[in-house]
Length: 270
Image (tube, rainbow, N blue to C red; front, side):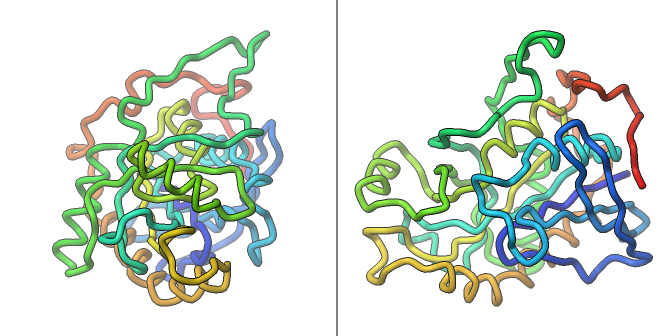
């Protein structure tokens, strides 16, 4: 069983893996450089979404290279984290939320591996964007560990890197959004297209503009992540222990397609 972990803001490394080494995975969209190690007898690769030292802004993240690279390496299951602003008073700073759906307000991002021509066209069903059995495993694990976790939440994705206006936040609330962020789309769409079992644990780091009583800042996000980061990584690693093929009966991989340039089982790893 091969597992990928994509770390968002504040989750830049894992200290639970053994025999860790950095590898290079070549993709048609550029190379990615995850850390490869072992945990509970399972192979795990970890990728910080924003690069080393948080050097890549959300609108410049190479989402296709990340997802393609994980697929090419052989990952079947992917956990990701996302720091978010909360649109709800009951999603307090520091709370963890297992995402269940999304609303996309991004503008200039490519959300598919298939852009016509030789690549063809693919229309992906996102009725369940996030793997339902993985969501249940994460939530149940949180309950057993005594880590407060909300079982569902709708993520609204903006282009960034600026924060949202109070008017935009109000519109998101009217549309049914629970959290706001800048990174989960197109990552979740590409993962669905690739047939990965993909889940996201969101971390509420602050109340969004117009809800918060103070101006928003990236420093505020990092402060909350410093305390919440341990909880979210513990939740992921304990959830990995519960991953078995028998409990993951879902549609995530049933309608998968072969990604452009990737034959089944072939990849370039250095």
